Structures are given as structure tokens and as C-alpha cells.
Image 1 (cartoon, each protein chain N blue to C red):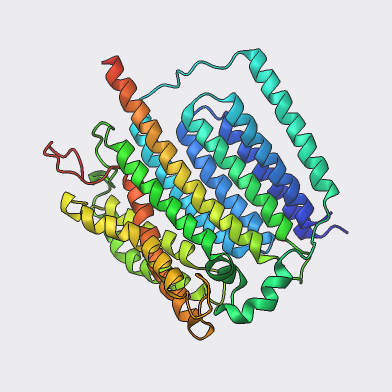
Image 2 (tube, rainbow over the protein chains, first blue to last red):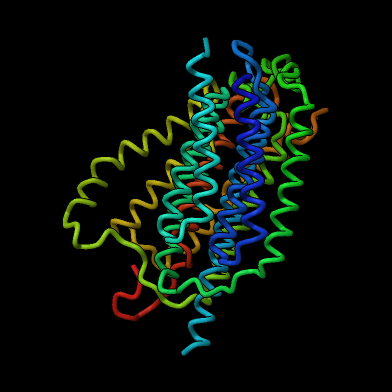
Length: 96
Length: 317
């Protein structure tokens, strides 16, 4: 048992929880969060792939990829949230 | 004798998975957002354990802090809405969950069959680090070896702010979130105390990224927090006349990055191939411009709609 193995399984668990949420939930805000969980799970897998038993230094390339992924994810989240606000406004007008 | 740190890892891993489940099943949406923030911080902690401090910083600052601020700002606007989305039919749910279980089984099988700790590209990065202009391998990968990826990442951020401004034009007027009068002078006093400190920390993270964990994205995120605090305490109120400046700052990162990448070409070099003597200066120049863009863009994403002339009483800040 090693740190890499433990957090690898954690990442897989988080990814599948997010995947399940994205498929099963219908509330848009929850779906966005489910996809966020998927992205963190995928990040876990890359960070684990880069990890080496100390004192060896980890592989920096997957780290850079995950940082890129985090920034892409906040961009996607911001657009999704704007769409949710717009949907809310449209439905509000519809009900009036 | 079990290593206490491994025990810590197991507990942290279990906590992270349970938090992920709780986020999706908790009924209250405010609690859901708070739990996502806790989840993000726990993940950042796990990444520190995996010797990835850069990733942990980015996740804590961008993936958790700023994402949390965006989620809360949206929650505030749509909270009047009851969750009246019809649930999926039970059969569909069961099938979906069954398929997810299959995916999990397949992934676990693949993961356990994959050897951990293989050399990967770490050796190649270490061999060429001396030529990159910076001493920190992650920054070398981001700004030199895979700079094209990073340029595209800044483009994605730019596209996001353009999309949000366009979509939010149709959103009904909601007062911008502010730290209300019920808190008295506290928020402004707090802002006066911490704003200079956060600004210095953001600039320091940018600078230190050349030799230690840190860099443009982490620094930019911390500076975006300065912007959000300025907006919340109304020390800065976006005006329609500020739009051209804001647009300029949004584009600054992409334009500066692309200009440097193209201008270094020629004389036997390809684009993105910085001359070895000036590599550090050029990387810091790019990082500085990108940091400004990231900070302005993330703060604008929090603010949502673009500043426009509106005469309604107190309709916006």
C-alpha cells in the first residue's frame, strides 16, 4: 500500500461519483458540480501518475497538465453558471 | 507497524470520496456549495501529500476559492427557484448507476494493472531544465516546453469571459453582491488591512514561480481575490466607461504571449523557442502579462455582467 495507490483509488471514486451525478441528477447547478467532481477525479489520476515514492521527484509534465485543466474547468464552470442564470431569468419571465 | 502518514492518507481519501457523495445528495444548495469548497481544499491537501504543491496551490486558489465565489454569486441569484426539476424515471437511474459501476470496475482494473512511479517525461524535463531559463520544472513545462498549451489555456479563459458577458446581457437585473451595511465598517476595514498583503502575496507567487512552486496562474488567482474584495466592499465600482480598459486587460495575456512567441522566431529559431540568454526575462514578461489578464478575467467572471449604464435606483453596484 502506498500514497499513490490510496489516492489513485480516491480519484477513481471521485470521478465515478461525479459521472454518476452528471447522468442521474437533473438540477443544472448539481450537474455542474458533478462535472467539477469528474475533473478533480481526473486531476487525481494525473497527479498520481506523476507521483514517485519519495525522495524521488515527481514528473512535472502531468502537474502542468492538471494546472491547465483547473483553469479550463473554472472557465467552463463560469460559462455554465451564466447559462444557469440566463435560464432562471427566462423561466421567471415565462411565469410572470 | 503502519506508517501514521499512510493512515492519514487512507482517512483523507475516504473523507474526499464521502464529501464528493455528500455534495451531490445534500438537499440544501447552500450546503452543497460549502461542501464543494471543503472538498476542493481536501483534494488540495491530498495533492500536497502526492508532492504536487503547484497543483495544490492552483486547486485551492482557482478550483476552490474562486469557483466557490462564482458558485455563491450564482446561487444568490437563483436561490428563489425551488428545485422543481422532475427526477429521472427509476429505471433509467438504475441503468445509469449500473453503467457507472461498470466504468468504476473497468477503471480500477486498469489502474491496478498500471505500474506506478514509471520514469515518464520527468527525466527529459530534468535533462533540459538548464536550457529553459527557469529553475522550477513545472514552470519550465508550462511556460517553455509546453508553452503552446498554456497559450491555448489563456485563450480559453478569454473566450469564457466573452461568453459570460454575452450570455449575461439577457439576465434580469439583480443587485450585485456586496458586503452589506449590517456588517458596518468591518468589511472595509478588513479590506484596508488585507488588500496590500494579498497584492504582495500575488506578486510574490508570480515571481517565486521561476524557482519554486507558484507561478502566473496561482498569482493571478490571488490577485483576482483582490478584485473580488474590491467589488464586494464597493471600493471599485465598474463603470461603462471602464469597458475598453477591461477588454484591453482581458486580451493583454493572449496578445503578449502570442507576440513574444512569434517575435522570438527567426534566425534559426521556431516560435516559442526563446533565446537562451533572455529566456528568464521573456518568461517573466509573459507571466506578468498573463497574470494581469487572469486576475482581471477571473474577477470579471465573478462580477458576471459587463458594466452598462443603468439608471435604476441601486440596481447595480
